Length: 399
Ligand SMILES: Cc1ncc(COP(=O)(O)O)c(C=O)c1O
Image 1 (tube, helix red, strand yellow):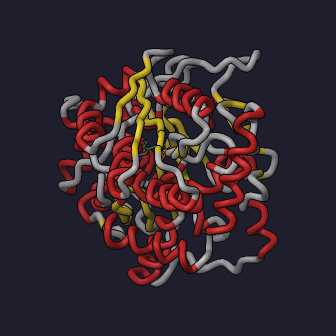
Image 2 (cartoon, protein in one colour; image 1 turned 30 degrees about the vertical axis):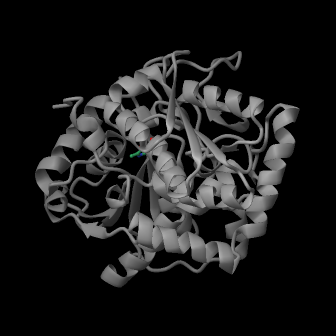
Image 3 (tube, protein in one colour; image 1 turned 90 degrees about the vertical axis):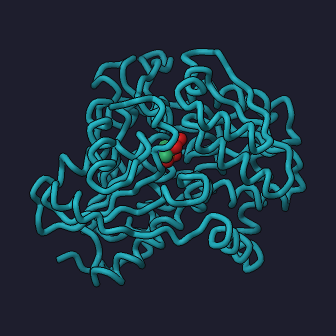
């Protein structure tokens, strides 16, 4: 049985960031024009985090606008099917349909304190674009969303939602028209318009973004831990989450990092399999390097050039990853696995039919990994982070 592990502050300091560094990973690799801006943002974040004024306002919107806490749901038919007890953390039930809204609310409250009037963001699956456009509408701010052309095509519903919410959609046709290209375009705009607030949607990019995003998403694991302890009277054996940039995963994992008996698994967008150019499994197949402002794992060649990526899930189709997950991998605190498109589709169909819950194709990667690793582990109890709902994927006809 998994009891609560005694923790020490020494262990804690291994995984928590120090000035934006996670061991050797993280940092701020940006042109000098951006440096002052990011240092100021880091200062503002540190000034407000943990203050009653900021935390109460954040908690207010999470509860009354987002609808938190999200349920921790015992998936009895899925559990029966796999032969192991499984709970789903229902981030799909949040307003706008995914975990992304937690982070956008946190960052937009900072933007307001900084006097920003325009918000810009990148999006892959469109969920961060929708969440950002929603938060901007909530506070009457101008908003511009950058998206790759391939992603706009495969996540049409979210493009319509972003426009409906009053934001301007900027499509980029560079590269493969995926998340990497959207980040490049948004960063380019930011460098030329330093008065805007760049609301980054995953645990990537230069300091202070990984620290901020990790902090705002940690509400997922805080709730899950409390809900699980209330329901089971002990800690879970395993945690599962999909990893694109890494924000929903770190959100679930953070509050369990010091519980050594809780095993932690990340599911990456494996695309067609372990072949460069046909996959987006960055931690499984990449190596350390600087990419889009941070030092972490990246899918890059000997010369440091990033490989094109491929994944059925727009939200996982990215050659970089969070510096904190890089550290967790190196320290063997978490393990990261390649999940193919075909495996993810199978899990997407399975959950829909077994539980009446249509998961996002991103989240389906976590479900697929859990289904594989938990087969007949009847004494174990696990939490899978259901990072988003699959409405956006329905018209793709993945059957
Ligand atoms: C539903 C959903 N899950 C997961 C992800 C992956 O992002 P992250 O790794 O930052 O959680 C996305 C990204 O768009 C998403 O929309």
